Length: 233
Image (cartoon, rainbow, N blue to C red; front, top):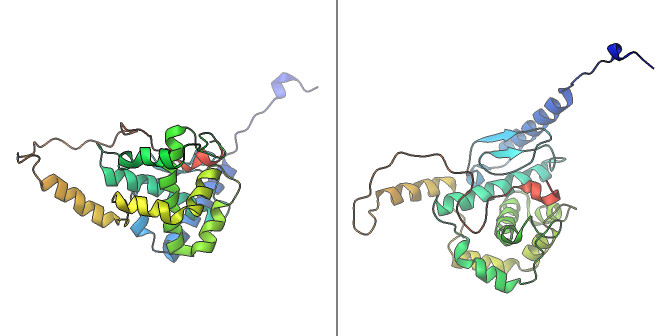
């Protein structure tokens, strides 16, 4: 047995850095090959090797769910759809809240734990919306067959994805009825934001307040959770 004084311990981060650079390179390649700009509702993105993939407060990509460009594209769009709903509602309004109960009525026995559902009751129903939007965006970019094939991979949200694909038209009609569809571009949301700021509330002049960074989670029936919920991350 070696003497304790001879023990040597090294921390090697080379593999983690290579993985992070690989994911960053894949994302850059996707941006060059596809017009992702109309689905990029936040431009602040970081890659965190071995970390959890999530949308807020900074869109963070781990190195899981990035084995191929298609997997990374689906993951990236998933997190951007969380940001779409965030921006669509603004800091004080959850755009899913007006029809959350309708989703519960339609799917009263939805699983609310991984791997079939999401991490909680609220997250499962929220992800019926997020995953629908994700597949719609991916379909525009790589076609329905490839977009659907990605979501059949053995991750979490299994029931959510099956339900979205099975009830595609019905869920789409619900999103359209509540003005989530047609999906706005980031530029259109910017114009809506400017319009809201110019429009007086109840005929009164709006009080100017200093801008604040978005909170970590909006007060609402759900919190923005990331793609990592697919596999229990």
